[in-house]
Amino acid sequence: MRYASIFMIVILSLSALSIPIFADTAPAPPTAALITTSIDKTSYTLGDTIVISGQVQSVVVGTPLVIQIFDPNNSLVQVAQIDVSQDGKYTDTIKAVGPYWKLNGAYTVKVQYGPPNVTAQDTFTFQSTPTTTSDAFQLKDPSSQQTFNVNYTIVGGTVKTMTIDTQSLSVIVSINSTSDGTITLQLPRALIDSKTNSGQDDAFIILIDGAEVKPQSESANNDFRNITVQFLQGDQDIEIIGTQIIPEFGPIAALVLAIAIVSIIAVSAKTGLRFMPKY
Image 1: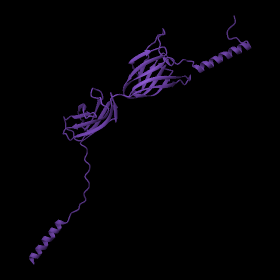
Image 2 (image 1 turned 135 degrees about the vertical axis):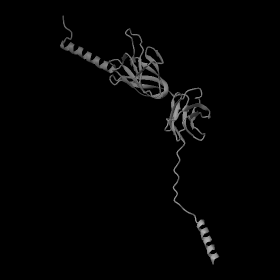
Image 3 (image 1 turned 180 degrees about the vertical axis):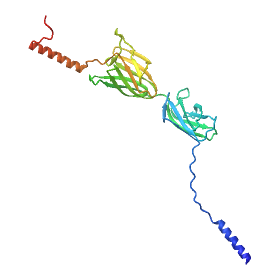
Image 4 (image 1 turned 60 degrees about the vertical axis):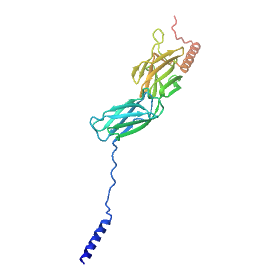
């Protein structure tokens, strides 16, 4: 009987051990990335500035962060080492210029901090030649109703609009500059000109966002003044200031003035009115 009791205890113990124990287990929280990285835009052209930023989870004092950029053939085009701030954040700017920025296509930014496994990457598209646009903008003076075609060629951006400022004797060209570039303008002399007191051609005053700049090149003929101006990415307004802009009396105003003069002469002849003193 004693052995039977012992046998039953052993059986019950084994049964208890074989019963699975179910416990409420919450899913493990996602682990934070050891390092992150991002870039400020998805596409760039030659001369653009690439802003790279991110954060590392654990900062090791004295350990630099390595940034590498690879072209579509996975060839290294640029490398940099920067320090990470105490809070783990980092930012760096890289200019897309140099002999290795040649291929168009998808480029890869890789960052590494300390061990080889602490890496992250991002991609962007790159065009080695900035887009060139040639077109004509029809500029209309609201006062005289005259219209002028201003031919232009812009590299590294687009022309949004052109306006006439008769008060400052200027033409304002508003652009969207996607990269550093140039714009060449063919300005009709009938629209705007710059002359010295002796009647010779004088240089235009050129302002970009209020700061005076010198033109890259200038040329002229009897009908047009041609200027080429360099601008930087982010520039918005290019103002060309001359000494004269649009004749005060346009074709419509001149016609009205002529009709008025003829009418005055006709009235004076019919009524005998005199507009000049008789001596």
